[in-house]
Image (cartoon, rainbow over all chains, first blue to last red; front, side):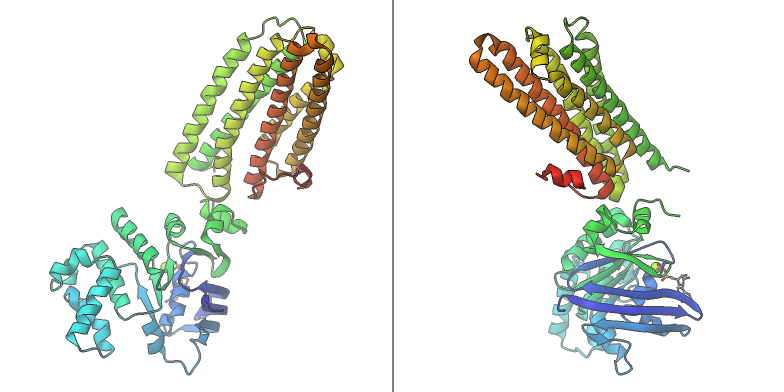
Length: 252
Length: 226
Ligand SMILES: Nc1ncnc2c1ncn2[C@@H]1O[C@H](COP(=O)(O)OP(=O)(O)O)[C@@H](O)[C@H]1O
Ligand SMILES: [Mg+2]
């Protein structure tokens, strides 16, 4: 189906002998925000990392099942990981700008991809910063070091950096959990705007954030996907008792 | 151990039970005054209780408002608090209608004869019963207890319609009966409204428990089947 961007089928993941994801099956819709919620250690980040094959970097990991991105099984032997990661950007909890200028942070990805033309690069830097809603704040100081920015600005810069290589999918792992409320609401607003162009999957331990930003919510518990549905239904009438207990704070 | 939030919800629930009991008392007081004459001590108690109901109604709104602002309730908690606000409105209306019944009852001459003639006592007792059942339904938060209330409401509505029809016919042939008859029709309309408010409360309990909205669902039979 055209509206489904990512199709997950019976996906299990082991760290050595330890099963961290248990037969996850779900459809992630295109151009929507999907939130992953659940208690610490339930496998949200692990699942997120499966989507861009970041777990490949961990030697003990083994994976079974399928992860289809636009119909292509990204765990197929013939698939080039580099191409996957190009299409799928990732933003982490701790913003991690390079110790370079603001401009160079954004231009880095496109340069690696072979772009040399200065005007083209300028254009990408501007568009990416605009899309990340941070252009007006930074346009006069593009040559300053990125490390001098506030936490909230650094995080939006990292989002801009992700956008600069024009991905289809953006993965965000607790992108606002280290930020103050104002920066948080800027990130949330940004997420809302970006979904027109991108498919966004966001891990958050902040239930209200999931409720505010996402179209669909998936609740994970101990490596299992307990329930996935429209965010509105999950937060008003969840089907599973475990989901109800978790979102109403009556867990365990 | 109950969390702070659960204690707040329990508190809210017990205040609603309290206001519900007060309204139930108002209805039974109104029915007593309607069915008996002369209206001895009428007015005093009922007015005092009315003030209590109004105060609790406001208190419930304040509690709900603060829960919304501070706790961001979701799922069944959200439905319970939404319902709590609505239910307290319904209860407050039941209280008002009881008072109106008392006022109208004063203007009915030869009340006993009329009450006997048009089976008003039966209807009044049924309305008393539906308020009791409604309070029990809320207290137990039992989605299955709502069906009985929908059925009872339907009976009450039919009986009221029949009685009103008969009273109007009587007024057509007997012009002396017009003033009392009109007042009695208004009383019946009020009784019918009380029963309707009880039904609304049952609908909110149903919503809280089953996450399904059945108000504006026109078919009572359907609701009764639920
Ligand atoms: N690199 C790793 N090696 C071994 N176990 C891991 C590794 N990363 C995560 N885990 C384990 O997998 C489970 C899921 O972790 P994670 O995906 O980080 O959960 P979440 O993001 O929901 O908090 C946890 O029990 C965690 O300890
Ligand atoms: Mg995590």
